[in-house]
Length: 149
Image 1 (cartoon, rainbow, N blue to C red):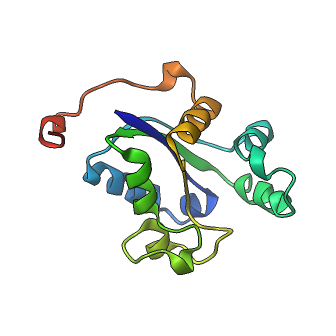
Image 2 (image 1 turned 90 degrees about the vertical axis):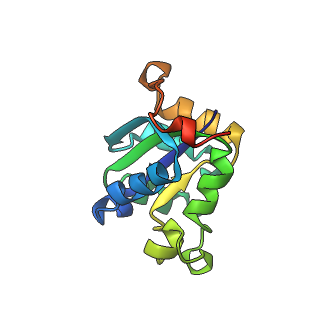
């Protein structure tokens, strides 16, 4: 199975959307194999957003992502990176389709509720930044036999 990293950002946590977001992924049939609630430390913010550190918007991004707690998760499932990105919706909420997380809940690009890995390679990198191998729980959902051919 494929894995991806998802993070409910501070605005999503503050608005009480963590449970609803988890429910969407569970109802789809995906399996959470790790999760934690935390204030992101500055060193991991720099590592996670390494490609943006030199960009002019980074100070605002850093201030936002450290402004409150985030809920970090690792999910598992077939084609989960592509499917989760579709469920999340476009980065710009104004362009996100209704029914997507950002289309239903977000208003601003800068505060768009959730982060999701954009490729399998990125997922592996982001999972390793935020979780140890020991934190990833291997188990079988009781309904897996009804989810996959």
